[in-house]
Image (cartoon, rainbow, N blue to C red; front, side):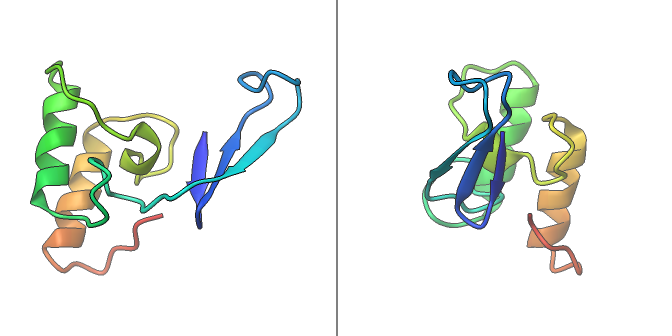
Length: 90
């Protein structure tokens, strides 16, 4: 699934109809906990999720590296964004 500008695109293998399905959603890339802002809490939650903790996150918003996987690349991008680097969350 991909979150771009508030649109969630579900690949055909996941959509029940066999076709790509799009739904309007509220999505802020990097907003891992869904509170409407990107902050250090999002980085902490994503790191805990990757470490196997029992936390609930928005996996679509957490994939800021946009490689279809959640990993430390996403944590690094979020930390760079919060540190003021020239990083765009997608």
